[in-house]
Image (cartoon, rainbow, N blue to C red; front, side, top):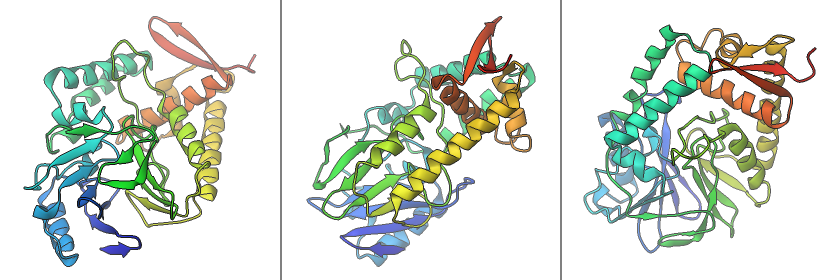
Length: 323
């Protein structure tokens, strides 16, 4: 447990995921609120209860949960607070909390179609059966209110909402101007670069989101704020956010250049590029590596560095300067 300045209390709990521990923040105001809610495991809940008691509170004192985004390691405890009155987040989080059958079916159908376009061989499509697994051990519920860009946090009006999509379509960060504090969720982490993760469009009629482009835009947006300290979802609290943002943007551009090298003078499918970009990881982390590869190709397409050709429903990429 780490108690930080200006009535922000950090609680750290374990997760079963490769990302490791996740942080939960407790803030005081007109009500006692939790920013993000850990992962739904007994080990995590025991760690949370022990640490909140060190602060002089108990689970029964929590009146509001505010979520930065919908991922399983951030929404796990929403069923556990007996006096919880409000669950607040981006409107899209509601579908992830309810997880109704048609939502899950659309989720799976989206990736099936996307992977076919990406040229994924049939033997790898078995991965689709595992897509729902991370959602199986997550608390279910629904939002009582929603927040968007520019809103003030209910009960904590010194905090303003910044929309930071990319890692998740629902991702929000919370900024306190008086001291430059940023509750950044998973948008900006000191030790690793968050994955811009693919998701279906919220409305099936819409074009699919391009999370890498969104993530870059969200990073650049933060450069317009005077951020003195970042309280992240994972890893240590840090400052010098502007420098880190510059490094993140540069690192992504270097990986995009590597994708161009992989394509060379050939035409390649997304799957072919993924297996060359992540030769040791793509089978064990299929979803993450495909998401990263598609993100890099979205960026290269956006800057007109690569072009595309569709053949029998499969998209092929080619460097624009290649003969």
